Amino acid sequence: MRSKFVAGNWKMNGSLAANAALLEALVSGSHGLPAGAMAVLAPFPYLAQCEARLSGSGIRWGAQDLSEHASGAFTGEVAGSMLREFGCSFVLVGHSERRAMHGESSELVGRKAVAAHAVGLTPVVCVGESLAEREAGLTESVVSSQIQVFLDVAGPAVLAAAVIAYEPVWAIGTGKTASPEQAQEVHALVRRVVAAVDAGRASTIQILYGGSVKGSNAASLFAMPDVDGGLVGGASLNGSEFLDICRAAVACGPT
Ligand code: PEP
Image (cartoon, rainbow, N blue to C red; front, side, top):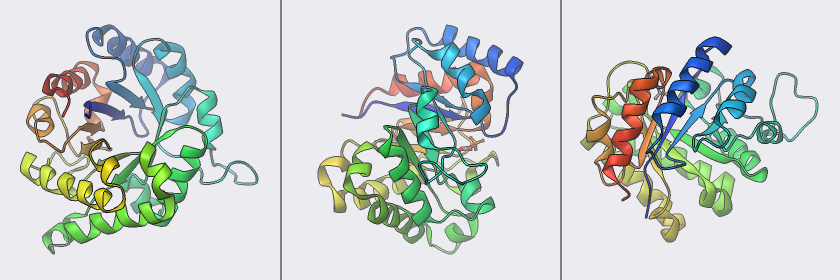
């Protein structure tokens, strides 16, 4: 059985004051939601603030990236063990903004997932096609290959601990959301690719949808049988809207 789960990717947004208000709204609005149903993924400098405010609240937190290395001469990088010291449960790997702006390959994404798993973090592995790839009919091959390379590099133990987020690049931050049917089609494909490696894991792995999820479209997306919740960018910066999205996920019940 898979419970629904929603994570908010704050991207490079926030300030101590703005986060304090947002975290307050999330904690007070989350009563009645099951513990573990929601998480926030904050910029590195704000992880201590998340830990201070969210500890004991049932809301978990995490980071948006990590180094593939454990320690050493990697100026500017942040190791998974450092994230664990601030109570992180999750870390994004392979967000499309990192793939596009920092040249991250699926191999590197796999190695980052290994580094996350080695310290007990749950990697949230992002995959998705660009608009040009979708229009060229390449969605299935692009997404399958991203997942396959991740599986080849990271292996079954990391797969057993990972969450996958399908985020069509054309839907991220654009206001264009995949239709529930488009999302379902790719989520079912992701589950089939996972099943070819580990049939048991395919029925339990959480596959989140990301790309302009809002309070108004969350329920229809989360009602799809293979959509296990959401990875939410812009709308996660608004406490009441993010809570609406989390409530929509919980209302759909486990799959
Ligand atoms: C994201 O950044 O992962 C994302 C899905 O962004 P948005 O919800 O703003 O499209």
